[in-house]
Length: 459
Image 1: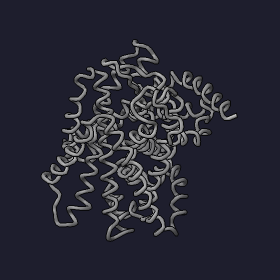
Image 2 (image 1 turned 90 degrees about the vertical axis):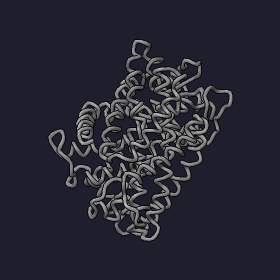
Image 3 (image 1 turned 30 degrees about the vertical axis):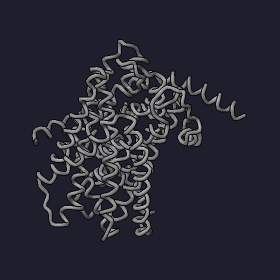
Image 4 (image 1 turned 60 degrees about the vertical axis):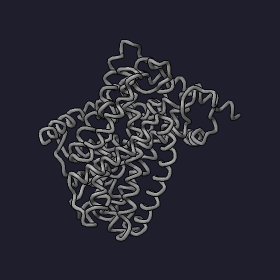
């Protein structure tokens, strides 16, 4: 395991180097400027679309705009928001949060383009069913000579979609919050039991296909975000006197990087801190990675721009709202300086210090819902990748591989899980961003027509 961890640690560091940083953030900034911030001006319209005002039962697709966003959010609003933020702050201090915000804002523009493309260039699988996602908009948008990029994305997605990080952190949370305080020591057998239970719950949902996944996500996601929002607001209220100080510290430390505890990169700690924040932000909101377009590509709509606007709300909810709540919770309680805990344990410490009797149990409920809902969506992504590679007849086999990986995630180390997923997430981003940048003019052409028609209809 140590050798495997060392290998993936080096692999993760290599693929998350300067070229990918330029591709993700530089590419995202280009898309932001290229679109002239137009998508941001229609945020209100995006909310109307999300509420179902423009739903048409006759359009192609399987699920509604709302179900598509909730399916995508069920994978992004997960352990990345609780454990991922904690990992970033533990390694980089408050300044890492600022670079997560940058990732989120830039990610909104990236999601607009990638998810518009998911509808604009939908393809058909071998059974004749309409499908969307990077593998399809690569082939349909660039041509079959570029299919090798689609295959590359799908192969990386088979591993990148595995739920090992979420399962690992949920298992750690159950141990730290529920079992150990009640005299039950952490051990392989207990972790395995937790893994088996999660595998059974996940199997019941994912074997029912996208319809069951989307309906479950549309119920769980609003509830989990609401509960977490209320809990963190209570913690911030308890520490109201220091909230302004730490909010300011996020900005000042973003460039000072005095609290960075990792190895220097690109000749200094500032470069390493930026990479840390961007990497954790990308892991949280998945903008540019290519997972969300697979969910949004199944939306029942014939308007690509409409879906792009809905998808744009994902990074805003995920990174700007939920990640900020976690970050402020960890900062105002001071646990990032006083505790050696990392990942979900650090967030749990913040909850227990602010709400001694019941705080950790509230967090455990949130973590359980966050993690379990993520398990449902990621299985759909992996299945779509396998379906593209070998056909729909055998795509269901991925679910069994996926369920088995839950047991692996429950019984292995946090560092290994982070390095494995980080590596394959980065590999998925390469074909997704490359293709999106090439096809961006096609999206903007459609956007100009859509927004002109919208103004005419309002007049």
